[in-house]
Amino acid sequence: MWRQHEVCFGDVIDGDPAGMNASQQSSSEEVNEDLDTKSESERQPSKDALIDISFCGATPLLWKVSDMKRCRSVGVIGALVGSLARQPRQNVRLGRPLELLQEEALLLEETSSAAASLRPQDCGDEERHSEAVRQYEAGLESSYKEQCALALEDKKRVLRKIMNEKENGERVSGTDDSGNPIRDRLNALDQAFRFPWSAMAVQLCTARAGFSHCPEERSFHSTDWPMPRDERLNTRFCVYRDLKNKGFYLTSAGDPLRFHAHFIALCISMDEELPLCDILAIARLGSNVKKTVLLCSPRSRSETGRDESVEGDVVYSSLQWSSMV
Amino acid sequence: MMDEANPPNWIQQHAVYQDLMHLDVGDSAQVYAAFLVYMDLTEVRKWKEVVGVSCPELQAVLLEGREKEGETVQMIYPLPSHRSIKHRELRCILDRGAPMLLCAVASDSTLVYQRLCDGFLTPDPPVDIKDQCRRQHRKRRLQT
Figure 1: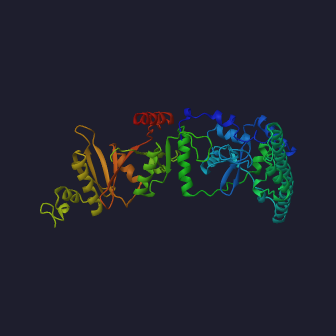
Figure 2: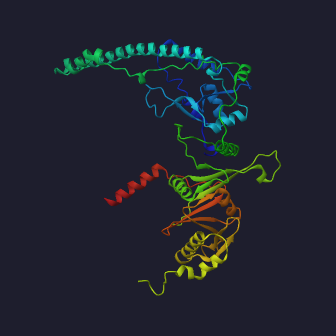
Figure 3: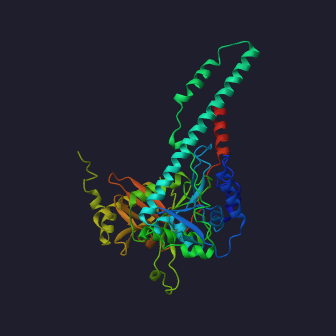
């Protein structure tokens, strides 16, 4: 986490976090997708518009650029986890969707900024669902064959270009025989070429998947919160909310923008037993990376001695380098 | 052969150990840990005015002392290293207001001190990469 004034949000939004510019494919479907994206961000969301949170298992995800911008503007950072398999630097320059921590999603829901969106399987029957799956898989198969053919053509084009350049080079310098390995490769390409399934580009139609409902429809479509709230999540959420209210920002390890966080927050309940060795180990870790380890525990309302309407505080203790070695 | 001056049960016969036992809190392992920390603070680190204090809420012996003459009193919580601890217990001592040290005592008598304080303590900023390189460059130049 770091103090508010040390964060520069501009980098996040301007630096193309959503991969909007990364789509250099020329097929008409992708162009339409970009147009949809642009029009959706130009349209100002109304005050009532809720951020759509989809769930993959228990993981909250945001798919729309406008939702991501809004969520970041209220200080919920998340981490981009999408990968365009054939773009360079895909371990650093990631795109949509934005993965949220469960605490971050809960905070958005609590402040009425977001709602869980209805999952398709909640409204269809088994047979329609299996049919949709079959159609999708058939679509993938035909896309794969098409991309195979295109990739093969592309490869041939590149090899021919190299070959021609080498031959031109030969004519100028008077040497010969350097184009032969490439010519052999070109001739063998039809048999030897392999296009792996994992290299296939898959389009996810976010603009057409029902995320563009108007605000009234969206609140009608939103479901009950699908995440079970166990004790551990409650503890983490109390700490997260309190820290946000104090002006801190929280980042998870996956974010490509590397901030200098000052603290490592260990969320535990007041009565949770921690082995002494674990405390020492985590303190050593913190001191090695020049971060303060914070023990954070929510205090129950009855303990704070205030009236029932006030929420419990969070107690913070810092593990400090003692210089006694 | 055991030295005459240091009988095998010299700890049990030590005046301070007996004082700590007589506080009637803490089990024998925790009192023993407190004694080892006492010896380290007084004999090795030369702390002043170190005394054992009873803490009924934690059922443990704490130590109070000053690192140097005239400095503020600090609280030390000695604990055998295999034990577990709750945040609530640490707060119990922190809330008293004095600077606090936790001391883990291992079975081989190794002592590890850990300081705790209330609230957020901003850490020292990390050393800038550029400064590190400059320092290393200077070191190399001196060596050649």
